[in-house]
Length: 107
Image 1 (cartoon, rainbow, N blue to C red):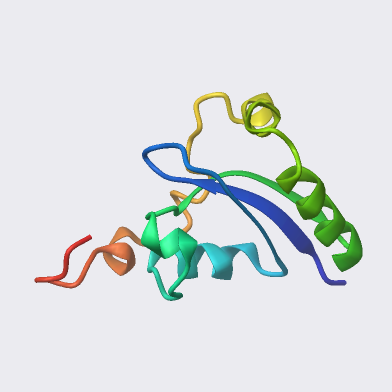
Image 2: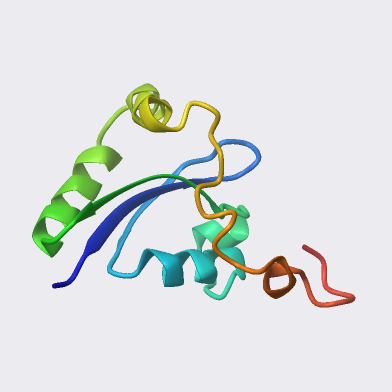
């Protein structure tokens, strides 16, 4: 059975990004290593602060759209309802050596 995830990422300035994926660990790896040229790469948004899991891709997409339509304060309330300290929930998922910048490359 497949699983789908709606997730919220942030950065040091608490800029929010909401996405949906069928493989949250892989997607976080891509965000952390900036493997895609995107909004998240440009603004260094790679800290997972919230996620939900569902078995329906339609439900995941609908929930993503719902959350994206909320005011910022409601999104913050959702995050803080399960993660009041805004901890990076994916921090321990990867070996720190893998996520270290290549020597000579800026982070």
